[in-house]
Image (cartoon, rainbow, N blue to C red; front, side, top):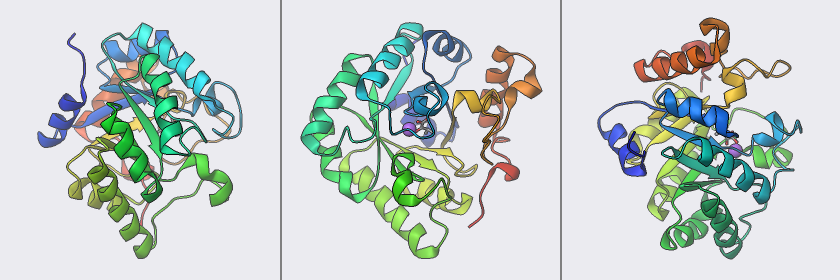
Length: 265
Ligand code: KIV
Ligand code: NA
């Protein structure tokens, strides 16, 4: 299969075709996801939760992400792979460039950073140095100690307006993809319509240009904490391959996420 590219993902938005994505951390699942037509994979710092068993993403290091990026790349040579920049690995633009290089060398096609206005210069510098960037707004798990928990963001009108403004600024700075996490569906729709770059939602409603889930959540494996936006596709499909197929199909036809997986403003 021809390699997936950011240009092909951008074309999907223009043509109104939903983008499908999952997190991946190892070669075997990456191979399965690629075979089932998942458009891109994210080596998320959620590996702190689902692989390491920590209660947040904060313990994850660049070396951890690089190791898992290499595994995913080995399993899916033609996949579009995004690697998360972990907590405190992009505190300055200079540090971001040095740490991003390690992830690109490990096989990533793009890196993802959490945040808005304070990241604009960092994004410009990464893009100028040939590191494609995915931005991330809404709930920012690396900021859990500031936020005081994992809560829906952008509910008040002023917060929603501010998130939209930051999304436009991130696009202007050179971000080519934007993850939106845990925001009201109405705000997910507003941002997706205002931006030319694709938006990828997780708890951000059905009107984002694509969807992402943590793979363990999609397989129903996070039993003690199941966020509202999660659906157990394995329970419905019966086996791993079938679950991935069902997820891809439901995202493409727009039946996932349903109203029961979404947040109101
Ligand atoms: O780390 C992760 O898995 C993520 C997704 C939830 C978008 O950032
Ligand atoms: Na992440």
